[in-house]
Image 1 (cartoon, chains in turn blue, orange):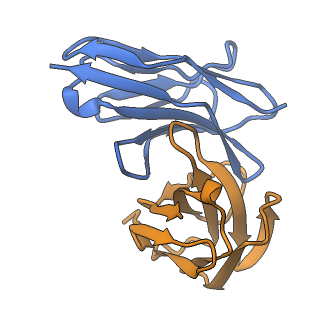
Image 2 (cartoon, rainbow over the protein chains, first blue to last red; image 1 turned 120 degrees about the horizontal axis):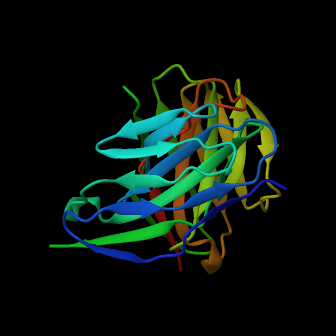
Length: 110
Length: 114
């Protein structure tokens, strides 16, 4: 079936540390892939996306590359800030629906 | 402008009340969505409207009644809700509801049913 699997959190990092949040998806068709971020008490914001294999999405220092061979779309940032503390959702498109991963909570400490 | 607005921001209602949630977008999008999100969980799709017609109902109980008066507006009418319906209700929109599109989310309405 169609699913998205994210690494379990919470992930706790010190400021300026390197971030990786793993995401893999089941490979039916050629989905678009997304990372959304949800700050405490808010809705979801699109962080970045990629629509085909080998595309790299990037925004605000975050990057993710659409890897068809490993069915992955891992989120990375070179140097996290306290303000990056939030829940991150990986998602894939599926016939007009979004299939979300379970979400990964990131906490960045000063 | 990629803004989706939702009102109210917070809502408290009793199990016998009738209330409505509202969502608006001015991006010219023709697909609009309602999601329900419980704490520490991903959003769950409830309804999809495409070109003002209901295209997907994810087996949502009839106490939730969606309405799309025009291409910019989406309502969710609530009646006889249960405490377990307390959640964050998110609205989203996308260009036309096709497979690869980006969905843009509103800030949500936080609903508490007493």
